[in-house]
Length: 218
Ligand code: G3P
Image 1 (spheres, rainbow, N blue to C red):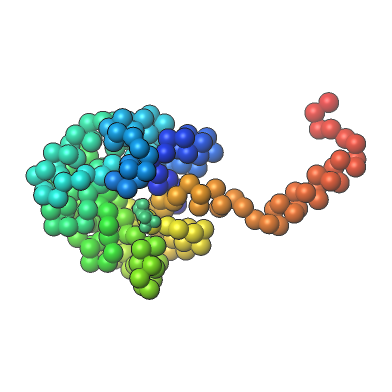
Image 2: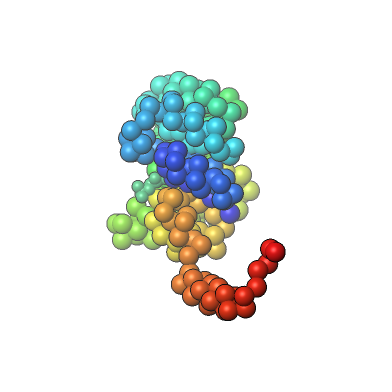
């Protein structure tokens, strides 16, 4: 499973890219607001840090205007994936932008039927929002399973990009189902390596090692 990080904070992106675990980045208008940066400048900078797909979201709501914004965003760097919302206008824009040869990420997906439409529109990625479904008492992971089954039934190549991930358990569940990608907030990515028994075991090894008086490098 690929990991994208869900942030427009270039400091976090540089730091996590150094771990070798970052396969791409996703942004959205809320994350651009949080960064306090100009969308064109920050998106270009992110694309220079990460080789993989960097999602940048259009903000127009009508297809023609979305296509114009999408073409502008796609011209910022070769690794841009234009993000469009899952509306009829967004689906039309998805088709036009993929026909141009761009990667397109269809976002704000909350149902399996929406995901089916996105695949038929040629989306490179579909972004089902797990956490926001959980927030209203539904099961976000059930949606990932349904989309996996539908895409496999028909051989759709659209990649499932599990989004709105809030916990390490979301990451594990998405991986078990076979989500192609998980986009995770930086804090969740960092927590994936944590385990109290790892810390406790390391402490014991280091304590015993100190008692040997040895050094590996002389
Ligand atoms: O990638 C979409 C993500 O940013 C939404 O996450 O936590 O705002 O639902 P959240």
